[in-house]
Image 1 (cartoon, rainbow, N blue to C red):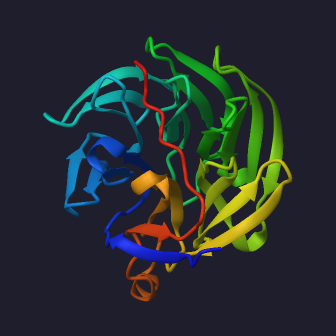
Image 2 (cartoon, rainbow, N blue to C red):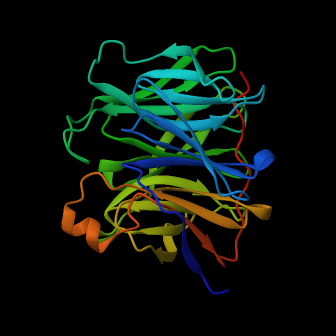
Length: 299
């Protein structure tokens, strides 16, 4: 194993940083700050940050094949034009649930944008249960709903052979797997592949590496863990100097670096003094494993 190093590359004030996505074309990391209603783009070379402010909590962002980005804003799937900062609504979900919002989202290998919802929290991880659902925005802009009764729809990714969909509903404290049909986008046969241990706290965002292993950010656990979904074993733990780690992705040269987002909302003044980097963006190097590029939305 090479020596693992954790560095705060963007001292942050993210209230709740989420959805890190590497954009190879611009050597940039995209991410959102959900309650601040901001989509951010950090230039890893120039180190500057650009941001677009939208009109509702923005919970995930993804690349778009035709240019620009897509994002989940409130309960809407939207297209985001970075140049003129305009937002176009592509579809709306959960119209009967006024207190809901989208949470994590990611594009599948066929270019569909999967994202799930949750009830708006009264405090971090405190909310009305079973109000959320998992959806997918197809390239033709129609939406399919997969299932409901979700608490906090969170991390998601697909196996390297595109036959398994991995998914986290945070308050189940489990990483789940489904059989997945690339052609139709259908999922079936849900089962748990890993149950979090007490000190790992709440499973949040997730990504897959080039060896087919899963990395899960543990909210309140201050760590990312590497799991083998075939054996259900934890292979590695990387601790960070902040507790509220929210999500992770690979990026940088050859996708050999990991980027981790985190939150500061819900921390008291004493906690913020002890963890001055809370809300920042972290880079982990020396993991000895690479990631894969994100898929762009095809619509």
